[in-house]
Image 1 (cartoon, rainbow, N blue to C red):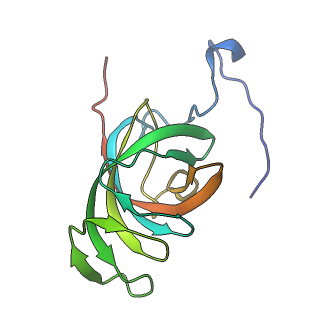
Image 2 (image 1 turned 120 degrees about the horizontal axis):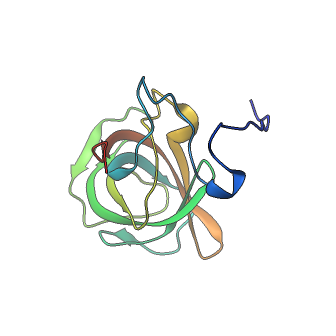
Image 3 (image 1 turned 90 degrees about the vertical axis):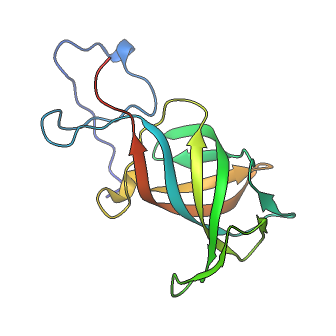
Length: 145
C-alpha cells in the first residue's frame, strides 16, 4: 500500500493517458464513468451549513473534480449508521449524512466495500478539508460509445 507503480499498455501512448484515469480488467467488472453516487459523508470542519446544491471539490483517488450535493437524503448517527432524520434541510460540522452527489466532469468511482481506494474521498472547500466520505452506491454509465 502506498507504492507508486509504473506500467505500459500496448497500443496506448503515455500522452493518451491523463491524471485520474483508472486501469481495470476490461472483461471482469470494467471501470466506468458514473452519473452519480450516494455516499456517507461526515462533516469535519465547515463554518456554516451544507445544503442541497452545495458544490465543493472532491478529491477521490487522483481526481480533483467539482461535485454537486444534489440531495441530502438523511442525517445518520456517526457510530451506529442508524437514520436520525430523513431529508434534512442542512448538515453542519459534526454531522454524518447520506448524500447523493453528481460530478461536474467525467469521474470513475467505485463502492468502498468492493474497491476501497476508489471508494473514499475528501471534500475540499476554502483551501481546507471540510468533510470526508465513503461511497455506498454508484450509478454507472452504460458501456459503449
